[in-house]
Image (tube, rainbow, N blue to C red; front, side, top):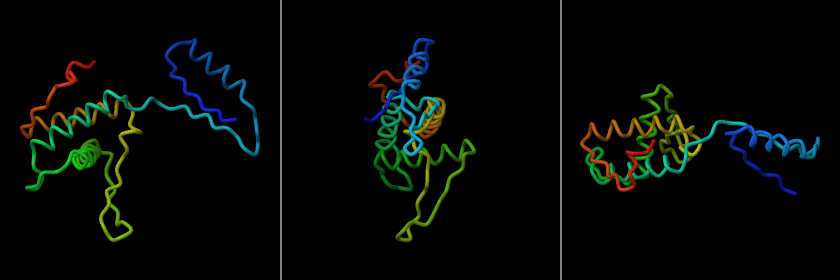
Length: 142
C-alpha cells in the first residue's frame, strides 16, 4: 500500500489530523516511510503571474538584439534575481562542452522567494519600458 498525504498546517484540527495519520503508519526498518516537513512552495497564482510577466517581456524587449521566447526570459530573470539577491549562480560546462547555468527551480521556491522574484521582474520590466498586461488582475492580488 502506498502512503502519500499532505497537510497544510493552518489550524489545530489539521495538525491533529496529521498527528493521527502519522500515528497510524506502519514502522518498517527495511523500508521506512519518510516524513518531510517544509515551508509551502510558491502558489499557482504566483506561477501564473510570473509566466505571464515573462510573456509580456518577451513581446516587448529584445535581448542583445534578439527576440527571445518567454521560457528563455524565465531563465534570464531567475539567474539575474539570484545574483541580485546574493544567492549567486553556477555556470558549468555541459556534457557536450556547452555552458549551462545551474539555477534554482521556481517550483521549489517558497512563497516569499517567489514574491521576491516577481518583484525583481516587475522592477526590471518597468525600468526597461515593459507594460505589463493585467488581464488576470494580478496587480490587485494580496
